[in-house]
Length: 194
Image (cartoon, rainbow, N blue to C red):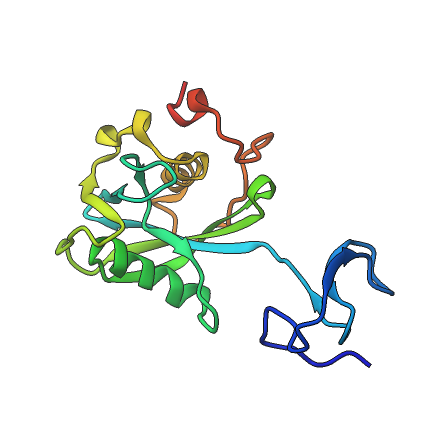
């Protein structure tokens, strides 16, 4: 009978591990021969927000790879034992010193190439008191006409900004997902809005 390694990411036994299809499964996994431990590799969850202050949108210029120097929404990986709401608000504090009030899920994006699920909220800034955190070179509040479309970091940032524009005056709406035919693969022309 396999050990229960519920919260561990490695076998306690220190036995040899190899990639194989475990009994009752249909995908190759890392399995410990000594104790039967199975390592499940799952997608990463990214949380963030399109945050608004008086019709201006909060953007952060990235100070870290990938895409250092390009603009993004305040967003990042969800932490263990954290709700998606708490994660989105934490990321806004860490990257922009911003406090948010979340107003529902704007979109859930699937980026299979990098095994990510992105949950993006619609949010209001509680004040315009913002400042760059460690992962941001600078932060700014942008009117729609001033968004640096040519310098957006990722396709999903463009999607979220355009989808937000579609529902900004609506009290309720159905959350979006990837635009038709878009997988999140990096295409410089698409990021630049060409």
